[in-house]
Image (tube, rainbow over all chains, first blue to last red; front, top):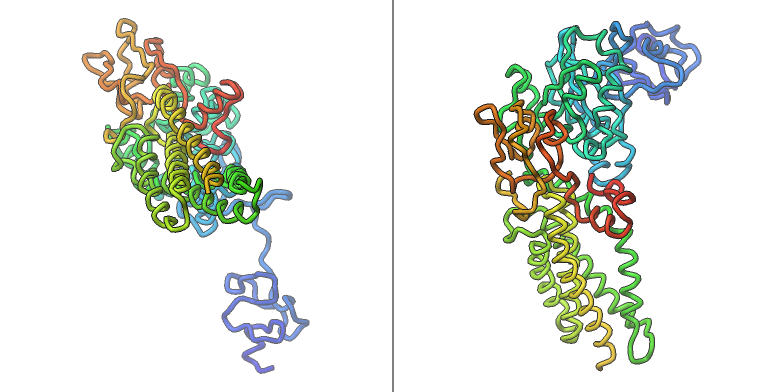
Amino acid sequence: MDAKEQETGVCCGKPAESSPCTCGFGTDAEKLNEPPATAGAACCGSSVVDPESDPFERPGYDRCGFVEDFVDTPVGTIPRVKTALDRSDFLGTLKARLGIGRDNYKISPGLYCIGNPGPDAPVLVSANYKLTFDTLRKELAGVHAWILILDTRGVNVWCAAGKKTFSTAEVVRRVKLTGLEKLVRHRDLILPQLSATGVAAHLVRKGCGFRVLWGPVHAKDLRAFLDNGMKADEAMRRVSFSLTERMVLVPVEVSHLPKYLLWVLLAGFVLSGIGADFFSFHAAGVRGLMIAAACITGIFAGAVVTPILLPWIPGIRFSLKGALTGVLAGAALVGWLWSKTTGWEALALFLLTVAMSSYLAMNFTGATPFTSPSGVEKEMRRAIPLQAGALLISLIAWIGSAFSL
Amino acid sequence: MQDFRHLSGVSTLQFDSEACTGCGMCEAVCPHRVFRLNDRLAHVVDKDGCMECGACANNCPAGAIRVTPGVGCAFYIVQSWIKGKEAACCGGPECC
């Protein structure tokens, strides 16, 4: 071992050089302040001392990745959060968007802060869905503010307000629980506009003495709102439904379908086997696959294409828009299977695709920010009998075609 | 958002201008700009834009606005037909 190696420290017989120790301790050697212990002593970590534990560590608690550090305030220690998202945040967002663990993607309710807020800094109120929290903090670089997170059961602002977990009672309760009146000198809360479905401003004032200022719909407008003396312009008050906003909804919509699709396909295979010779496993396999192809085509047309192309597909009714994309997709499917099907089978597959697409497009109403329950119900009363009729004709044609050979 | 429209003439929104105090809360909270404040009084300027979210009625201190709030979600409505209004949910994580 030469002098140079002794200086830099030896790790498991390998020269450490400038790279982190690879002994399995996960220590970043570059960050260590302490000088290496006596060189040449026993290996595997003994030559480098790990850093002391974080002064903010508490037994039994894990520090969240989005927390920069902690600040002492008159109402206790409050985490200061980062305004830049890291890889784990993006990964979490991706999983939530794909519907994986989306029901339990939340942070602890209570007070957080951004920057160096003082007693006059604004208080922003939001939901404890992690995706909502990330959307909020990434817009606040350079802002000094307190953030009051409510317990919305890990649901976003608008839906939580609709479910009344983002409510007047929860705002009042959380303000009192955190002792907000001892933290700030003013008596203003900035709430996201879309929480107004669950929060009544005049009742919040009555309940805890704080005045509600309605912030913009989108977190991206918050900085302009704050710079503009807490005033939102018309554009900030309007919901939008852009191409990107529609596209991110598609994976979640589709991720809910497999559990229903399984039953549909099972029924499809059983019905496909019924024929003149009572039941044919060969027919169940071959014709069942055709049913599966029609289902997948219907899902693609109704739950993927229709949401994405929504404003450009003619019609007002979602069921009609879905039927239109279903007609095109169904025609393509029938064309593709033309040589393998009879006329009745082609009709059955076509109608199944159209009915499925129309129904799924109608279901997308729940993900849009502009349909009213009255409107959706009116549309459904007309559309569902037609969809069911198409499905029935499809069923008769499919089973009938197996007997008419 | 005005290019996104669903069926017209269906909203349950009712506004009593006699009771209105002109506080402007409805105008502030409506995500579809259905209300406009004019001469210290609110006016319904785009009733067909209403999605019945209920934010305006919830925030009207004078009780001048009435609307049957709910979610315009087909999945939820099917559930409420089958299981009844109380047991229906947004399909769990589905819509919301």
